Length: 274
Image (cartoon, rainbow, N blue to C red; front, side):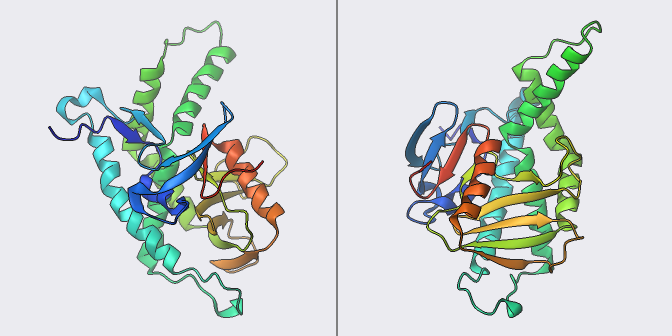
């Protein structure tokens, strides 16, 4: 019998493999994990988590119910190649940064924007946000009959949203129009990632703002030593500017945001210290 693809990755294994404790060893890469709601830590293979049974299944499609899972498998191959190219283009040694550029073909940036957009959409955090909006609607309009939704309904809404691609196009275009900063970590404290790997950081004073607000930057760790932060075009530095980070407090601050915005699990190439 062939593989049934019941256990489905919420975050691509090819992405998590960059955080392997012995470097990227593909799906065999082992990472340290911390489960926030249980305060439990350990070490395990990236092919085993974060996964959930039938997370992207669409029963209404019958024999093709795993169409979305197969779609993600296809683009993950492209994501793996893109991340390897990106990592190989980064200069870690501190030299005269005036001539440093992260070089890749213009088409690669567009492909990365599309991949990052889908990486945002496919997580359990997005599904929980749909549920949160529904619960707020129920609380805000208690005397208006609202359909009774359950876990399967939220799953259906989420998967339909992914297939629609409108939100993915919104994020991809927004990322394309931002200035990207390359953060190079020279400390012993690694960048962490999580089951919600692309996060927005609010630099404004208002708590609830638009996803396209210039008060937000978007941050994604690529490896323990390298991450990307996307800024509005109004910032003074050039696109793809390098920032060499030597203060563990700065790294810890980014990790704090990652831990805060994770759904359940945080990952690292080193054992956690809090």
